[in-house]
Amino acid sequence: MGLLLLLVEPSLAQDNPNWRACPVIATLPADMDWTEPLEQRRRFQLRQCGGDPVVVLGIEKGKAEPSLVFHSPDGYPRLLAHVRNVLVFQSGGGASDHVRVFAFRLGKPTLALKTATKDHIEVKPPGESVTIVVPPTTNPGPGGRFPPPPRPKLYRFPIEY
Image 1 (tube, rainbow, N blue to C red):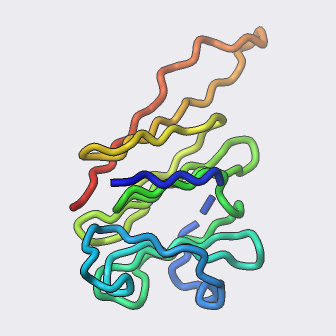
Image 2 (cartoon, rainbow, N blue to C red; image 1 turned 180 degrees about the vertical axis):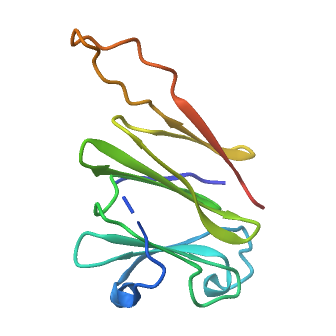
């Protein structure tokens, strides 16, 4: 089981048909059924529109049309990690970075996490789940000093076999 990390933010818009004209930049299988053709397997597909914005599609097993279409308002993500049925994005979005996790759950693609941070997230290699470590956002107090940082938040997403 491999971990794909690319140093590289996305919005739900199911009904926007423009994604169909965007070129496919990656198709990532969300299962281990290597005997099936890729177009029959559950999968994530990334498309890039107009040079920067990325569209994430979640396509169920045996289907041609996606049941999840996610448009990126912030352009190409600065971090992209894929582990089987989990796809992780971190992208710049103004004052904070946006973190999105997509996951297939019981064969259906979902937006499993939507959060923000001002630091780099960590994607820990899988065992039975993929762990995402999100540093908390801290702000200076009234005197301009930063308080001790709280512990990072851990999110776990189960690997589906």
